[in-house]
Length: 394
Image (cartoon, rainbow, N blue to C red; front, side, top):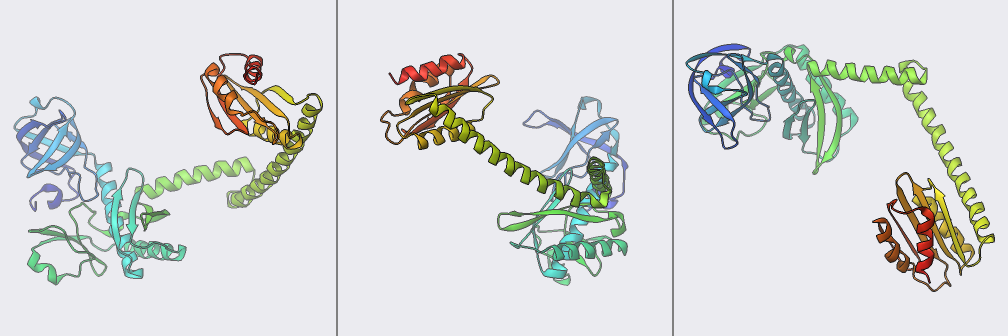
């Protein structure tokens, strides 16, 4: 492990090696094994490198037993003897920035609040760590972020060393190591000592910056999402674009966008309340009109009415007229929906209606003896469905 090129020189972008073997895994993927490699295989929370070998794309790298397999997108038969590997450096350096940033932020939470990290994930857009705590304050997040960025600005070296298990007692590690034999330590002097097999820049300054984006509760822990390095600039550019667009639509300066949006949302809530009140009054009026124009059987067909409106209308009617049976149908685009309800003194079960008409529209529904509702395909006109509901009562 010590002799692997990605450990010997983490900044190595190109290398020469010899093809040792070739193979195909159980999923039919072709791979080659080299005499040495600068391609980092997936492990320790860090994704694999990509790049090319003799111009042929490397799409995955895995450590299987003692082999580091380079999975090739193409014909491996042409890769023989001495070859040249070239890393996708933008991807590799991004991973190094994020991984080192994770070390810094994790150490900051331990240093300031004794909050250990229990898991780490390096995603394609954000990085997350899970802290062993069920709640955390905004002040704590800001303090840990500030400390990590202070260490970045100090441009401390990021050192690595190999030790044996017997030498562990000479170091104060952030957490116990799970490996045996040769152990690789990643050290940020006077700040963080950690057993780690990943790749990192050679100084904290190369991490550039850390920005916490948010938190969420996750299985009794707090998950902290953040970005480092170039991802901070990408995140800033995206948020700047969104904020500028919102401010433009609100016709206010960016600094006033939040207050202007809050004002609009408040006005919208008031409008929605007024609209809901007006709809309720309209349904009351509509219910009285239907009652006055009918006897005990009240049937009506509508277009573009919601199920909630039909249900509310039916409830108003059967409350006003306790011996009424109400049959309502609406057509919404290519669907038919219905509600059937009865007053407290009416004797028929509305389930009988649902059972007979749902097959006519290939529909689904539910309810009880007092009210049923359902919907389905527009296989028949609304008038025909309404008549079928009436016939079901005969």
